[in-house]
Amino acid sequence: MCLPTLRWHWGGRNRMEQITKEIDMSSMKAGSIVIIGSGLIGRSWAMVFASAGYKVKIFDIVQQQVTSAMEDISKQMEELKNSGMLRGSLSPGKQMSLITGCTDLKSALDGAVFIQECIPENLDLKQKIFRQLDALASDNVILSSSTSCLSPVKIFTGLKHVKTCIVSHPVNPPYYVPLVELVPHPETDPATVETTYALMKAVGMSPVKLLKDIDGFVLNRLQYAVISEAWRLVKDGVMSPTDIDIVMSEGLGMRYAFLGPLETAHLNGEGFESYCQRYGEGIKRVLSSVGPVPDLSGEVMEKIHQALSDKVPADPEHLNARRKWRDACLARLATLKKEMQ
Image (cartoon, rainbow, N blue to C red):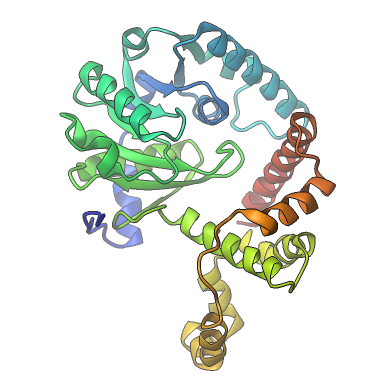
């Protein structure tokens, strides 16, 4: 299926910064940010908005889910404070006072100014919840989805509030990783994009805009390309799964934590043009040897899984401990990046 091309004329960076400054965020703080779904992404989003002083409502259809989310967020905030990694200037208690839970959708939307949907990555479920939001939300509320790869065309087409609909795709977990991909529907009002962009900047995120819709957006396309080549290198017996991860974490990842691949190339030559002239033939030769998309099953999958499980057993206890370690690393990296910038 061919997706409609989105061609927005955003203007230069200076103009973008000017527009962002002109958008008044005080009206957003007068209302509530509504999080639809109380899972890991929803909880992390709630913490992001509360850290910047925004009132947040977490909606879920099961009261126990809401209760568990509130308890977990409170625990996380105290741990973050103790480790010096709590975002924002407000205390954990003050941030928690900004967050409430709700199991009635109509009540949750009362006073809403921005809605961030965080339910499972299932098109039918997302279409269903956005039809409900479309029927209940007022005309000036922004309806945003956390989807990681479902096209806004598939999610939002046919909604009466399509002009205020947008995808705001975070990186898991958004509390520690600031990137947010903004993907508008072809009928999304540019003001919706600008307001969402300004809101994300106001809460400490790093929003980027897709100029046209593409399957998987940008982060996942880059990520999947790396996973695909890593798979082939294991399959062809070039390197072990463990060593491939070291190539990324101790090599490319060291650069990419501060620079993207294009600027990295720019600095590795006398500018990007020089880099292409110097290394272009070698790059084309290597890329011509890249194989087809892997099937992601069978013997290679089992080999990679076993190698990773030898390091981190694939059970909830070990995975959760490793995720906690990952999050702590990301928090410290985020702090370092702020200091460096």
